[in-house]
Image (tube, rainbow, N blue to C red; front, side, top):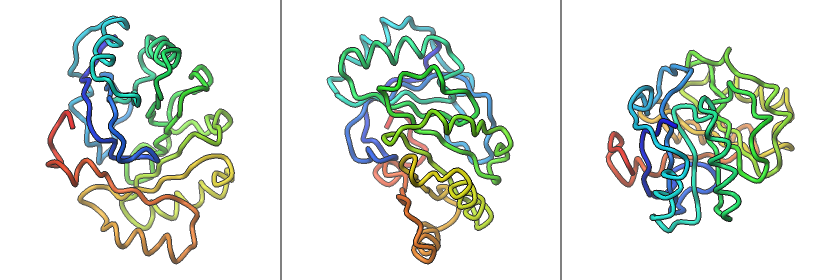
Length: 211
């Protein structure tokens, strides 16, 4: 499998924010979001077998592992990787962009689906059939750049009754909409979601890799 980077850092997003986590970032993505902050993962990477990836993960000594990208589900080996890590009693989460079918993903892990809003330019690529594979421990993330994104996200939440299906995360595009403005909209609407800010970009320089 082609791996962009493996590193240990503080989880900056999701309900696991603040927890020391090993990130396994796979190379390649089928989307080209306007505000993507990991464009370096589109092509850069080295070929490793699953055993080598697991060896590097083990060396960090962390219980929490996140498989991310790019889009990790583009590589068939990711299913074996997740299965083996889960068998080793790691807490494994998968961050995926919402465009690829999730039916084969191990249900023991946590799925974090990044549903793309209109400002990303990729909202029409979403596979909403994936909602059928969600569990209560899974999460859906909406990255918001403006009021249109926010209203679109609210409509999707209502249409698919997402509040009762899983955890809902709403995050401002870094350097775009002010977090305070997004927080005020959430409070005004009494929206039962979690506002998240990319914690790692507050701790380290926003363009710093491997943190």
